[in-house]
Amino acid sequence: MAVNLTLNGKTVSVDVPANMPLLWVLRDELNLCGTKYGCGAGQCGACTVHQDGVPVRSCLTPVGSVSGRKITTIEGLSPEGAHVLQKAWIEMDVPQCGYCQAGQLMTAAALLAKNPNPSDAEIENAMDGNLCRCGTYTRIKKAVRLASRMLTGTNASGGANNE
Image 1 (cartoon, rainbow, N blue to C red):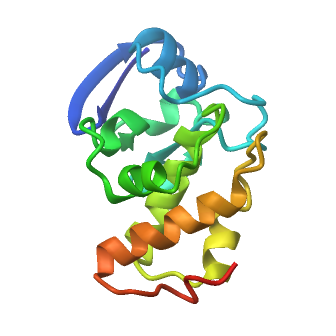
Image 2: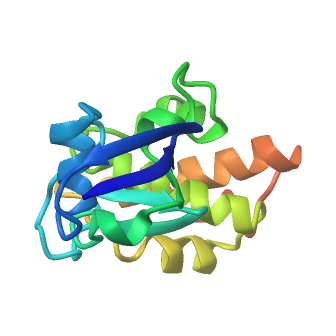
């Protein structure tokens, strides 16, 4: 079955079974390997991408369900690494092993697109479904706060500077 979608701003067509998970289409058919396979059950968040701006687990999303939709992967967030979250991630030295980071970034990007000045509780709630094997949760929260400040031009964001 041919599936047409907008991927990272470009129209693409893939000829795959409609029930194939979007994750495997991205990685195996389109060679976009930034989106990671973690658990395969939608529980860890490593495979998070945006579907029309909303974070979804690509391991559970059949490619047939995204026909005609806009999909954004970590490669589409900012290929040059210029997104405020990518800058904040580097400044806060967030990644250790890095495996979960694409999903973490995509979840945080959806949060900041919806709410550029989230409280600590809103950050924690949004990021709750993304697991980090290395336990960098404190740095992730600091990086989301920093990105929020970069976006809004403020010194504090929803209780920023509080642990």
